[in-house]
Length: 90
Length: 305
Image (tube, rainbow over all chains, first blue to last red):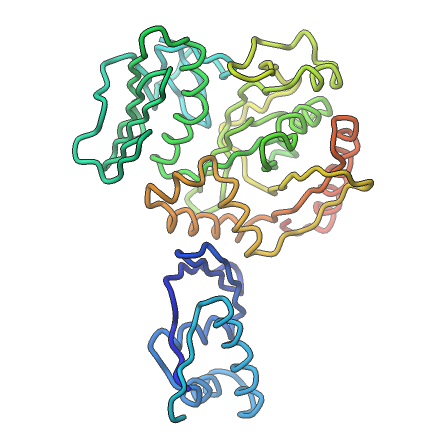
């Protein structure tokens, strides 16, 4: 699976969270520290396994837990039209 | 010329501005003059039926009033349409035109009233008719000085903390509110185009600028119990955008990114709350008492709201 950012978003940091606003839709999203890191990492298209590898370097998390949680988070981004997922060999 | 303090700025004006805070002396930061104004800007960046915008200039055309040219955030030239009532021009100048000038100066301008509580500013946003001015008036009768009505201008100090600029303009109140709050005798003339009067608040803040402490979003409904609920950050940012003095103008002047960044900075320091209250003037005292309790509670916790 290849992950791409979608749309144009403004982002700002408030305390430990990041907030983003879609310029096209005016929708707002709030991201945790880990969510913000994922957002940084998907600035360039990246595969799910490469993304999980990078996150496991940054955070203390098991591989299977990481993958499950990242997938759920990505579905959230897709729902808010902040990311798109394309099926590729992964 | 007449001299006023409006949203923290010293304004010298050819036009009498009813309801504004009159000064005896001061060095003007903004000058408002009668003069010739072209019907359109040359080389506009954005042009609409009612206004043109260019680098450092903004031209507003108001049918039945005249044309206003705003330059570099410190000069307003007004050409009055023949036969246009001066009071209508003054009303435009104090509302839309000053709001645009503040935007031109890089302020965050909210459609809100503001009250001083223990040396800090509390803002009250909400749609027209939700009771922003009436709540500020009620708080004023309880010893919480009025900072501003209708337009609240937020600036940042050198450390990035948000401050609300002094305004102390008179409150625009309905006859019903004037009677309910026993403010008869404090009227200072009729508000042009509205069944309201300018009323001098019983207590007015005279500080130049006050640190912002909290923002309340007013909503009235047919409910029994008032409530104050904190807003999550995304919701708060959405409301700050929706309650901008002129939300469409922020977008069309290409200030969306700046406004978002400033709104996020504001939310990094203060709390924003939804204040649901019973519709009507009779419950205002109760709403004000609930606010007092909320302020006492947050102060005793010693935390930022």
